[in-house]
Image 1 (cartoon, rainbow, N blue to C red):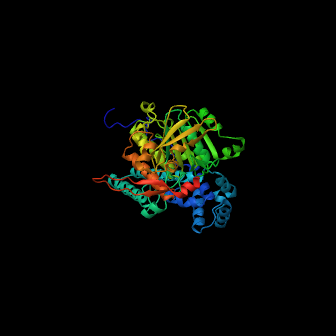
Image 2: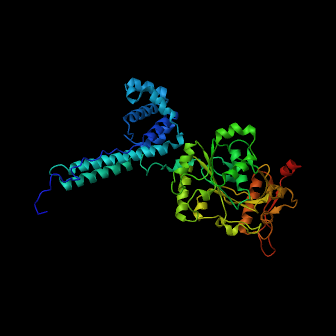
Image 3: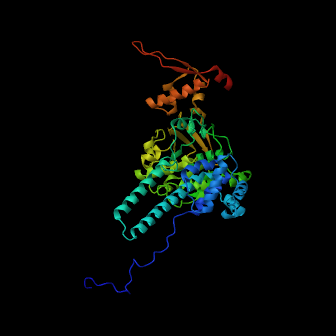
Length: 506
């Protein structure tokens, strides 16, 4: 075309076409879920208000209902739909928001209050996107005005972005503030001194807010032990391995690895009288998850919220992560684990040991590096139990490789595969051993017995010393301090069963 020639009028131009209508980002289901949770439990308002921020609801009716909830909560009044109906009617907003039926409909949308913060995050993200979209549309309109000044537009855009960033950082809903707390609250009010989920304060097997991992080769009874703890959490028993188990509200069991075998194992401990309890308080997910936890870090927390569970059992870890040996994926899994724990969900994980160590000698003591996968898998766990023994052998040994407080064992235990129960061999109970030793025991003596022969190392002796110290503290033992060595040699500290202990047994 010659220079200066104009385009034919019939030639289409993308600048002449009307832009397709653009729907702003929003998620009405998330808005309904948050409002419903706030109606069910007014304390949820305190949790979601810093996240949602100002003017975050897409539907004007939802924003009106949200402001009514805030007003009720500020005055410490109920937030149920009946009270909200009265308030909105007095304000003249009831019919505008959908009337009484819609308020009750929102109250019926109940995903559990535990997921409200995640739903609030969705609302906030959509609101932020809408603000960015509005800013972008405004920029386009400015750029199309006659005589538009590029520098002025650029300066205006930069000012808007700065203001948006400062707003997000300054507001309590910002991601940098959501989980921050002052030092006193962190130390004194986060449940650090809470009672164990399994065990005692001195010997904690499973601490609240920390995951418990049970490791071992196939067939050594990981599932048998895990089921006993879970059924105790459900209230079918009070102790496992003679240690107390705290109750749970609802358990979600992720039966990803051979669910039929898991069902057969559970059947050994389930009776017709347990039907109502298991239907109401135990939920079982069969087979693979919708995605691996390293790819969707929020999935674990979302599953717990969807099923109103405060305890999750992962059976087993290899089925929950894309690969166990990649450090970056292991860290991603730990993020998923921590997001669920942060929401108040307790986690038990069943896992395998390295194949190279599966046939190790019976007396050999395991270590954390024998757990299969990246070291970050165990690094993020709160407690690690390792079961050694031969597949199908009822007599196995339980080692506590990572402990929240004082360690247990090693414990020689026996599985009753018919009844699905596990009992402790009393011959390795420090209290029993001390009671049966008229001449008393030193820490080295006890260590040699507990490891099953051989020369105990320093760690074994220290562990035995802690066992004996706990018996002294509980009044079951007395302590005779040793004498420092010298030219004539020394004498080790010796422990004896107390008269109270001997009398109680006799």
